[in-house]
Structures are given as C-alpha cells and as structure tokens.
Image (cartoon, rainbow, N blue to C red; front, side):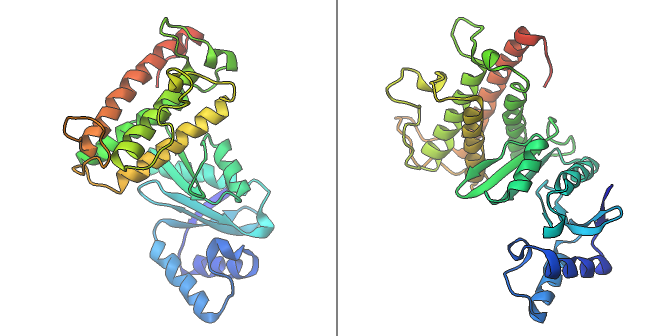
Length: 307
C-alpha cells in the first residue's frame, strides 16, 4: 500500500537522507552533496509546501517524493533501489485521488526522454506522452469540463479547449485499426484522419500564424491533395496520435505565454490579423463541431456514446 504523507520537518529529513544515499542526483539536486547543498535541498522543498509529499510504502518506508499543485502540475522521484517495483504507478494512482479531492480535472507532467519508468507509468495511466524540444510532456485527464466555480473567461476558454482536445483522443479509445481507417460518411474522412486534420489545424493557427514559426508543409504532404485528411502508408494510429499531442503541447505553450489581445505575427490574408482570443475561440468552435462528428461516427461503429 502507498501513502502520500505531508512533508513536515521530520519527513523532510527522511527525504534528504534518502536523496543523499539513494537518489539519482539529477532527480533532486546537482551532483555533489555538501552541507550547503543539504540546506539548499531543505529550503527548496520547504518552498514547495503544501504541494509536496513523502512517498511511503507499507513495510518498506520512504521511497521518494511526489508533488501535485492546485493547477494540476505533478512530478515525482523514486530512489534508485526502489525503482522497477511499480511504486511510480501506485504513486500516480494516489496522486489522482488527491487531484479529485482538489477538483483538479487534468494533471500535467514533464520529464526527460530517458526516464523510461515514469513514461511507462504515464502510459499505463492513460497519458499520451509527447516529446517537444527534448522534454516529454504528458496529460492525464478525468474527461470533465473545467470546474464549475471558475469565473475567469481566459481560464474557462483554455479549459474548455483542452477538454475538447482530450475528448478527441477518448473518442478513438478501443477502436480497431480498421475502424480508425474506414470512412462512414460520403465526404470520406475517418476517425484517424480527423485527428490528423486537427493536428494541422493546431499547427497552422498557433505555430504558423500566431507565433510566426517557419513551419514546413503546414497542410501536410504537398504532393497529396487534401493531405491533412489523407492517411498515408506511414500514418499509424501511434504516429498520428503523437503528432497530434505534440501540436497540442506546442499550441498550449504558445498561447499560455501570450496575452489574449496579442495579434498574429504572420497573417497571409488581406483582412486584419486576428488576436489570440479570436484564434482560441475559433479553435474551440472547430473542435466542438469535429467532436460532434466523432460522436456520431463512434456511435455508428460500436454504439458507444458520451464524452
């Protein structure tokens, strides 16, 4: 059994001893422990209170640290001698329970590409990790709309957009490869090609237009008509899904770093350039339409309904 214990001073000392004796230095502090470094460790983790916890395993003791903020950011480290025993997955399940108590609808994590145990635990929890600029990003959602108590329009806008982004992937859960690739409507799109299209929509509006990035082939393969809607031979469920998640992560980073009244950097049309607020609302309505399309197609495939 796994407990997450609030990090009081006694727990902090246990965590420090564990870090000195058994942690990967890159996980907790720069290499090389000195008295000053130990004081820095204490000060750092005191500064994280009350969002940081001691991970305690029955009949084992302290095995590492976990963190969960009210915004849903989370992380953990497990001491080297305790890795490979499923403790990361158990801790993740406990963190999800804590998130429910905090009314956190989505948990987000970042790690390094070589942290394979953490990435595996995230995948088992239903996340789709995506590597962006050398860092792995992952989200674990409850499939719920933003909290009812929210009143800030910007937070609600971003929250509902993320809800629809996550819903797109949930609509594909459990579908066979044949179902993912078979069109059920005269226009010819398939569930998987819809995800490919939405990935390119994210890429164009946030990276190309708003941020002014030099994006190659923003509508897909230039040799293929309507390429963003076409599944080519190399397009697998995993590759399309990861491409989509990568674009969502990049879009979120761009929009979170900007103000809603900021204006598009690269606008190829004659009319005035839109603001970020306009773009996000445009994306929200596009997602709402396409999630509705996926609703209908999923019901036709296997009768499943709901978000």
